[in-house]
Length: 457
Image 1 (cartoon, rainbow, N blue to C red):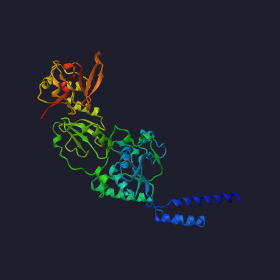
Image 2 (cartoon, helix red, strand yellow):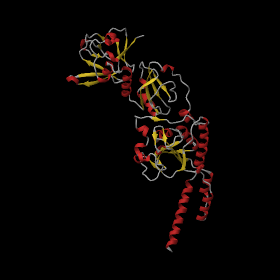
Image 3 (tube, one colour):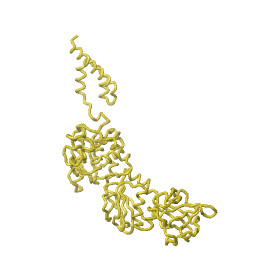
Image 4 (cartoon, rainbow, N blue to C red):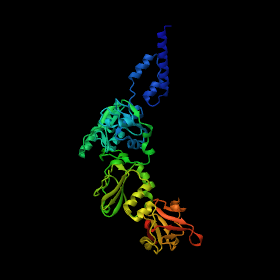
């Protein structure tokens, strides 16, 4: 047998076998079932029917869509939370002439290079659960598409707004919704959409450390550059994230010292900050939660596009601000500086200082009515007057601390062997505990300047 004829026969036989296996596995639609059940006398008949059969995008439930809306960290987190989204990958696309790596695309010389790669996310989704329309609506509502080559403080061509489609159906949806959203922006006197809509050439996954970045990096913030403009039939999740919030009365924040936490829905850093810090806070400086759009009447100098942002305000003006998650230790040290200032109390609390004997705070607290001594920063109960006694030392003395309110630490400073006592929630230095109390018991020698007192009711 001629070699070429043999090779041709083998190839045709292999194609027939593969097509037969493929048809047996297809059960998704009547059209596909018909293909699987058909019998063909030769390969030409098979090819002819395949070419004439319309297997549209609608019959394929799992789709991918590549979106660029600024830094990919927050975008990845938000899209992953959507029902129907199977997986989200951070990566790079739509560039040429350089390597698709974070180090390369963020170089200063690339920031204004039109051929630079964009930071993007590849969204894999089940369109029987979440429609392409919904994803693109959320895309527009989650960021500011009127900004060119930037989102907030992130500036450069790598942060451009872009939709990179995989099918004509996705392209048609993107074009239609872009026109609709532009009309909505016009109604709110916003700018022109700068989003580029293009076919996807190739997607390059980002480095491993960029994947699930927010979940893997506990100290950070969630950026929010949304315009507040939504579609008339805005998806529920987008409404929660971007619809204009109800007006709030900030009159009470214009007098005295206040703490304001800028919060946002679906922000894991916000939830962690609440869990680690604010859920246990009971201090005498009021703490308020606001959205970034609810700061009317306040004079704020810190950027407010990231959440959480913690603001320490006095008489309506920011005195100290921090964007991003704060640990309990960091928060209370900032609060200490805000409340106590450059005082002896701050030096005691955070510098392990010691009150002067028989100081004013001691005289104030040595003969109070029944009640509880509390941490002056967190408001947490520390010592009860029922355990107080007069040691004659010039410092407040107690037989014991309230259960689970303090921690103990070895202290070998000044050539002495002592046990330091700290407040459990704030970590501030309270004093020391000795074994020379009445009847051989404990003596908690505590600095009065770091305490407040609440009488028993």
